[in-house]
Amino acid sequence: MNSRPKPIRVLQLGLGPIGVSSAELVLHRDDLELVGAVDCDPEKAGRTVGELIGSTSCSVPIVADLAAALDESRPDVVLQTTGSRLPQVADQLKCCIRGGASVVSTCEELLYPWYRHADLAEELDTLARARGIRMLGTGVNPGFVMDLIPVMVSASCKRIESVYVEREVDASTRRGPLQQKIGAGMEASRFRELAAEGKIGHVGSCESASLILHGLGWRADSLTETIEPVIADRAIQTDFVRVEAGRVAGIHQVAVATRGDAEIVRLDLKMYVGAKEPYDRVRLAGDPAIDLSFKGGVAGESATIANLINAVPRLIALPPGIRTVLDLPAAADGRV
Image (cartoon, rainbow, N blue to C red; front, top):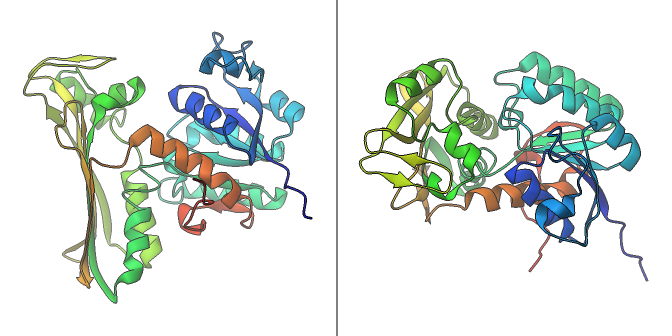
């Protein structure tokens, strides 16, 4: 009789709302073992993961030093939920490589890092390959709805002319940091100032468009992105912010890839508090045409965490280097 495989040893890096839920899901998986946790917040370091999730059965300590935690716990995989921008998290990734741990990350720019940071991506990929390490950026958006799904369903088309994805998200059901990131409650003038500086809005739209282009083998002449505020038509109170009528409720962000005069990819994201009928829609023009809708939309935090955790056993079976969600086997592991 074959013995049961040993659980994959996992370290959670970053214990914000996503990281805490990620660690909690790891604890419920028989194929994963939480062996370490890292967060630089002095209010968390020194406590245990169990204290954060309200469980007396988990005594994994939270420490502030990533290198020391890697040396102590020897994880196979690090779940990184610390930042959206690749340069912001690159030192953490390098530390994980030196520590011998592969990485599954919610860093949006790691989804397709060659778009904005080709030199840094090449550096990380070279380091990872040399040490037999794998790295992946994933989530629900980017990582699933607006990039992976369109590429997956394209397999049923004989010919594709263009890809159009719409997403309308009720941000009032999402975590506080996301509501801040979309400017909920701001004056429109301040929103536009921060948007012009790249300090507000959704990160990853152009990475999603780039992944679609890569997955379909397409070339684009241009890839552009716009962002505008969605203005609240009524007062809205969430668990984290109050939005007065006339102030910013969220974002309308669009990424467009063109070839010649034709749009070949358009990703249209509306994410704002108070959206009454959230939905996701994927349309492919071609033969046959595809029109796929998700009533209510794909659940944000839950789907992000599920994609993060489900990627772990699939990632470690792949060759070393930076991988994308297109490299992963499509199915999860058949859990019920």
